[in-house]
Length: 222
Image 1 (spheres, rainbow, N blue to C red):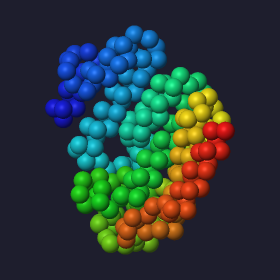
Image 2 (cartoon, one colour):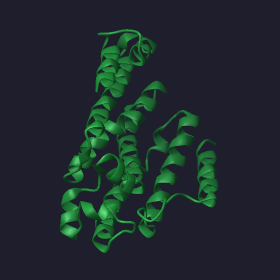
Image 3 (cartoon, one colour):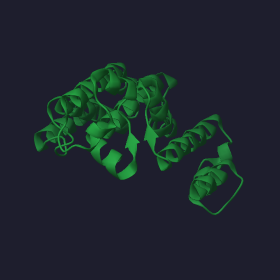
């Protein structure tokens, strides 16, 4: 927490000589609206880091989305800002970043729980499906936890639907290619998590998936 406070002090100009101060200077102390927005996005991430440091147990989907709003959304916003992209890309970017964060947590839910005391699957959905936190420590996914996961994946797929317009709203060819490829990664990973058991082993994209993702990026950049 002390290091996070020091980073924040550097970002907002209360201190110098650390990574936060370096970023602040790179953005000219927030002199322009764009630089101020970039620094604001960076500072927002510190909220999520503080939550993570104390462990987290998401009560419901809204709680999870609030966490993603601090931990994932600012990353996409920062990239859009430094590339000078229009504000119309923000909404789809927010949705994509949140979806990626949820998918990553579903991949790592067992280790997140056992090693870090973090549970991101919405607690109310787990209760409604008959699961509890003990299910997260098992070596295979229980039927109740599987049901809660599928409900979480359904909500995540809704986010991906909202993210679909993102590539078409980005002017920068490189960033547009990255956005298209990332969207494809998220869709494929969601599909694999539907049929895979992340408690039994790592659910990840195949080599074939990654080749198709790369082609998606190349096509988007044309």
